[in-house]
Each structure stands twice: as structure tokens, then as C-alpha cells.
Length: 134
Length: 322
Image (cartoon, rainbow over all chains, first blue to last red; front, side, top):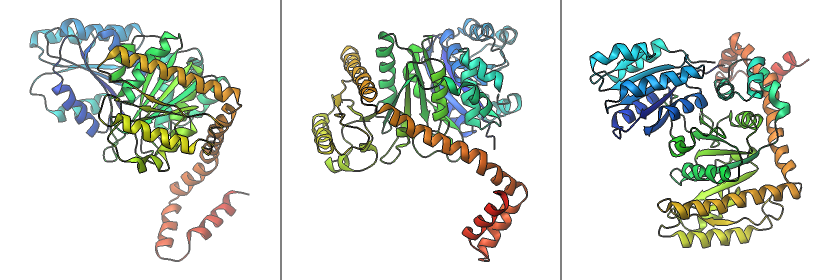
């Protein structure tokens, strides 16, 4: 019997050492039945893209609280696209001003979650928008 | 599926990861991809790293990758973490220790969840090793979940097994017990700066010396006990892991020179054939019985003590195996 699971990579790009939120999410996704690859802080977009390919994830979840999201998020999406992996859903979260969102969506992000978003709403979004590959 | 196998043969990383995933997810017909690649397997040296949770397996694996890259070996890593028995989810956090190798094309790290398997690895690890092997990795490191005394499944897959011990886990009787302490080809005393490391070293050495000639399958290999320095002193740590990498290679050559490698490979191949037979012969019968609702009927009969499992099995066998 097939036993399909959603695989998600959670990572924090750039110079941002605040990962409490990302850890809470990792736990929450684990409890939602996903397989969570957690790689923590201080990563380059290149590292994140390489890991996403090696792990064959369905979703890359990026968290950024430093304000550099306008460079970091699109860069991850671009690198994945360059590798022919734009079927991987890239979502982001953190302190993202309203005015930046349009640009991020245009760069290929599929959803942005800001402070106040509930854990349930994230899990629900993923379950509704992502099917395990394979 | 045939195409997926071809892509793996061509060295496509994502296809390789997808194939491992299809094996994990038990997607039907994945064996067709495996049929494509099987003839190319059998060239890598498989190294198992096992030990208690928090013993330092991932950090050791990270440093071993560096040591092998220095020797210009390519490295594949299968890092196993536990699946939740309640939700089926998993937090795979081993590679957080190995991030410095993320962009190195000579290193391929794949995290795997146990998916309910109880032996310290997952069911798909054996086939995952084949996939890494076909990608041409010189060394394949399999990091088990944090284990206790009994999870020794790794011996069916690794040519060289490293058991990582840390001080403070119990007295010398623990070192004499069966199970985990029997499977090491190399012992590593990790966190050797901690109190009790010297005592643990002596106890382990005593145990090894006692067991020297009785260890089945070791064929005269003298099991080394290595102290690994604290990770807080990076240069010393790297040096002691380099020594470990040399020992691992020495063990591999020992296996080859003494015709023991083929014995270990035979063990794995036997298990594989058993599994393939199970999947091809028994599984379809079970699916059939389940689909027809017969399985439930039989269970009801058993609960009502109308018959017994042995008679039922004999009857099913008569029906299907003509």
C-alpha cells in the first residue's frame, strides 16, 4: 500500500539567528504528519536550493525576520527554477511588509505568512495546495 | 519508472532522491526503476554509524565527510531519524550538522524517516544504499536513529559498523551485554573530554579483548577503540576523525583481503531476496484476501475459536499455491 507523505524543507536564509518561530513550525508540521527537514539558521540561497534537490521536497518554507526577504526569497525561487525544479512550492514567512508581497509572488512564491497567521492556517494551506510528488 | 532508473544511472540527483522517496512511499512499480539500476550496484564501501541519541553521530558524520573529501572520495549519506508513532510525521534534523557540505557536488545527503521500522533504520535504507552506489559514491555513510541495545539492523547493510559511545551511560556490565555492543567493527568513544571517558575506554577495551576470537564474522579483525576529541577544539577533533577514517579504510581492505566482504554482501543479498519474494508472492495474496474481505472473516473465525491460524494458513496455501 502506498504511503505518501509531504516533505518540507524549513530554512532560514541570511543573517538572522532568530529561529524560535521556525522551530515551532517544524514541530507543528511534524505533528501534521509531514516529514520536515530542518536546517536552521544562516544559510545561503544556494545551500537551501541544493538541499531541496537532494531531499526531493514538495515545499520549501523560508523564514526571514531580518528585512532581506526581497533578495533572499526570490533568489531561492530562481535557483530552483534554474535547476528545473520550479514544481517545488516555495512559501515564506516573517516580518514582510504589505508592499513587498506583490513582488515576492511575482518572483515565484506561492504564499506569504506574516505575524498573526495561525499554525492551523499554515497546515491547512499546505494540505490544500500541495500533493506529495512521486 | 524505467525512465526514472535511467535518470539515476545518468547521475541525476533529484531523480535519485525521488527514487528513494518512491521506495519509502511504497509507490507501485518502483521495482521497475530498481531493475534498471541493480546491475550497477556493489562498488561502494558502506559505513554504518550507530549509537545512542545525542552521542554525536551527525557531527561525526559531518567531520568524516570532510576527511573523505580530503582523500578525494565522493560521499553519500543516508541519515535516519524517527517517525512519530502517533502522527506519522518526522523531524529530520541530522543534516543541520552537515550544512557546510551542502553545495559540494561530491557529497549527497538524504534524510530518511524510519516509517515504523524498529531496527534503527528504515525499510528503504537497503535500496537507498543501492541508489547512492549507482551514483558512484565511494563511501556511503548510513547514520542510524539514536539506538538503545537492540536495534542492530544496520549489520545487514553496512560493511563497516561504527558504534559511538559516550561516557556516563552505565557500568561495565553494560559493555558485556549482547546486541549493540557486539556489532562494532570500530568503537568510537566520543566526547572524550568528558568525565568518565578514560574509564569507558578501558572497559570497552577489556570487553573487546575478551571477545577477540569469538566475534562471529570478524574473522580475526582486532576491533579498535578510538577516542575522539571534543568538537569544541576543531583541529584536534578533525585530526582524530581523520584517524577514524583511516581505520575505516583499513577495515574495508581487511574485509577484501580476507574474503570477508563477500560474506557481508551475501548477508545483505539474502535479506533482499527474502524481501523481494515476500513482496512478489505473499503481498499479492494478502492484498487479495483483504480486498475480498476474507481477511476480516478469517479473523472473526479465529476470535470465535472456530478454527486456528495454522489451519487457515494451510488452506490459503492450498488455494493459491498450486
